[in-house]
Length: 434
Image 1 (cartoon, rainbow, N blue to C red):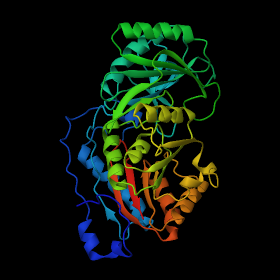
Image 2 (image 1 turned 90 degrees about the horizontal axis):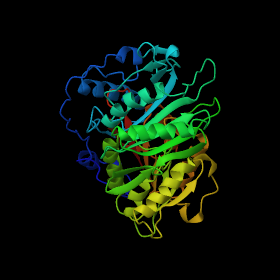
Image 3 (image 1 turned 180 degrees about the vertical axis):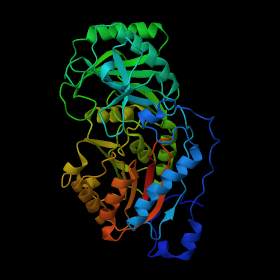
Image 4 (image 1 turned 45 degrees about the vertical axis):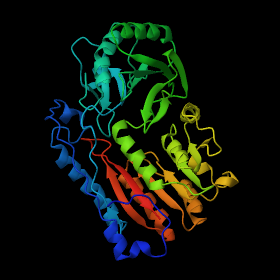
């Protein structure tokens, strides 16, 4: 039996033999193996470490490698460790593709002779682009769109952006596909908006070819800073965002907002967080840090928590507030959203939320900034029975953060793992801390 929900334990219950027996490691069953996959550019691309190998073997290997980080840090003493839960889909699971666009001459793996555009991914830890026409991990609707979109670009006056010359128009393509429908959101990331009218006409032709481009945008990135998106986004056609549905809730996701690349497995994790949270006591508050477009916030609100949700991306906060109304959360339980960096909110939280009974944190792969860890320690320190659910896509930064967060005497009670990124070297982690 796995932990069903985190209750407020009596003193020392987690150290008892009875508790250990009742909360032993859960052994998840594996889904059927997919048909053998052959990616012809796997060696050159390097993005998917295990793409041409056994799924079960690759999952076991990367799980053990990451567990060693937790074990070497001394974090697993007295911790119940669950086996990695396989992804419901092992292929065609990536519903979001962020693809670089560069001149064909600058690509490591080039398109056909005479073509100007290379579209694909950079090799790991490099700026060398690998062009590809489709990827076995991408949603089918993304793979269908790419050849027609590339043909339109080749026939247009649009110029691919050159890192060497620091010139050109189009830098990136961000393509997000609904996991329940064939609807697609496309965002052109350009150095300016001079191609706006031309791109609109291109979208109309792509629609005529049968692509369900329901939301199309132009994002302007006119500097050389890290990151894909710039600060200005203009809608070219269709709706403001892409419709999605998880855990019985309806969402609309904006062009620069974060949403999990594997919605099938994301729903599994969100349901698990909802289960662990359990029904709230009357008036109990929760924090949802790095809340994105509000998926977990709404599930916590459904459980009766008065939820404070914090997110740095203003677009995501606007999406979250709209999603709250879209799902008819009008009660005093919120969720209540704050746009800002978590680390900047030490000493600036509303008084009603300063003693949370539950904290859910889901940072980027960079993990928590030092002041964000300070905020969590303050929140946990105000109640002996407070609980922390830490969700992470990066084991190294999660280990670093937990080493700091557990110095106050709390324990990592259970560590769970979900394969959000099949055939890659990454996993999604859920740590249960009390």
